[in-house]
Image (cartoon, rainbow, N blue to C red; front, side, top):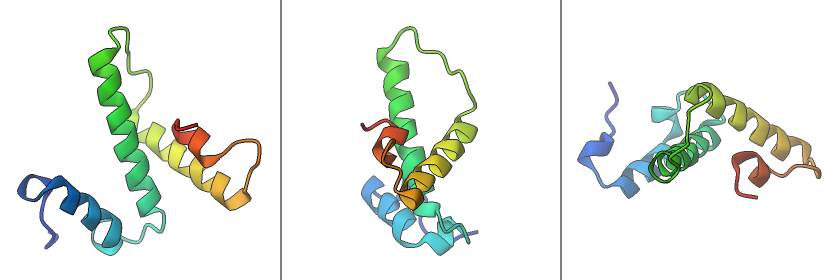
Length: 94
């Protein structure tokens, strides 16, 4: 399908860099690919930590839908320069 290596065959760093630099291969025509990819990675990390360390953790919404909403909200914050809510607040860094 793609001539780029899969995550299991290369170091994680190389896979991350390939996803962020060669957006036409992984992200297709999605101009928001870098943001979308970063949001999904961050949310996967948060979800994993919650599952490991929070015994009361329950997945309450569809992961992909949640990531898509966060991506759109993040980009809207960047586009609108919304002072009331920063992009970091959207993805849970603030």
